[in-house]
Length: 490
Image (tube, rainbow, N blue to C red; front, side, top):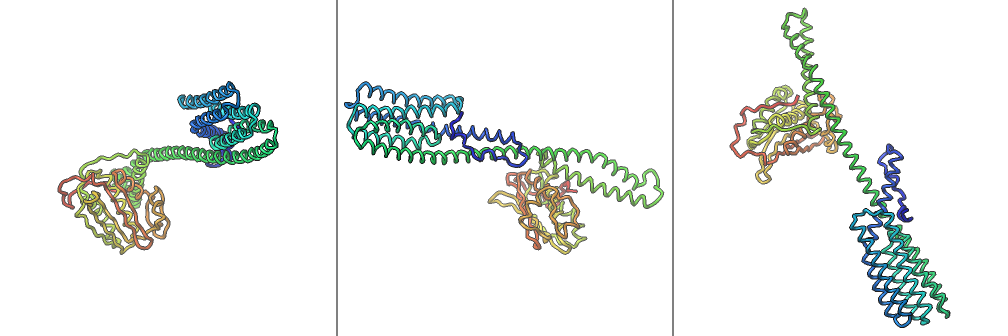
């Protein structure tokens, strides 16, 4: 069994992250915590192994002082045993280090207790021998100072394991107590009383030191276990999210097949390819079915793109892209809607360079951002689109500013999450599933860029798209009116 101090893991059992953690998990965590605390105690004890040499040095000084006062054979034997015990204890520490911790922690802790008891017993033995063979009270006082210094040092070096420090204190001071009782003068009685006070004080300090060390180790181990649990939970969450998006992607694929059939047949009915339907209402209904199917198909395509992006399956088909022409194409697609709602659009795109990018995906991202600006800007508002290439930082930026309803800064992270639509009086009248902005962010990040949003309620929103300069192609940009194929978001 591990000594008592190693099992003081007061609250290590209560490290479950939620109520769903089973009792068996809690017991397993508590057992793991106890084992790791014991291993940390052992590590701290082994780090003070060089102190064993100080024990030998002090014993050599004592041997010189008692050279003519204690039988030489006894003194040399004691000195040899002290050196042998210190060497053996150090050998055990080195063996554990060489084996990489293969020796059981419980066994090594017991070895430290036994080693401390042996070292303390040798000091107690020389005190008894001095009391028996040397009747000079001054030598006994000298030994008392030596034992007091050694036990005080052991109180700190053996603090991680209370049983070891107690064993050393008891054996070393026990021999000194016997030697004091042998002293025939009244000074022996007073020394015995002082020794009792010393043992009590040292025991109290050793207990407090041990509690402080073990509590620190328990807290560290508990934090490590919590960190491991959180890391495992993060990995499980990431796996669940990937699985969720893969399922959504699969469902989107499955929905596209019947939806394409609906679109095809409704288009045939709308055009009355095989003859009149018998009533103009049927033709009108077929047109509504076809339009609704087109909107549904666009939404499914967007969901599929988001699912591929979230599951890491989205790739780029890169080529030469004139950013100015790309933005112009996106603006041209939205111009009729802007004109209908009397929204003024200004642009400054002359500084945009030619870059290596996926025209379809980057165009979809920009189109989504422009659609958002258009959808949430009240009639009579304004939208400005500007672009620039910063030679100093070698970054290209596209800035879209509008006078829309805006949003609080705390709501921006939520707006970038899929399927999240911020509640307001205007958002209830705007169609969408909350996918345009998150998809744009992921498509831009796929190009190595970033998307930043600055917004204020009632003032407007500014979206900044930053693309790395490493994608710039060092050649003359094509005119802004050049053709550029763009697949815009539905």
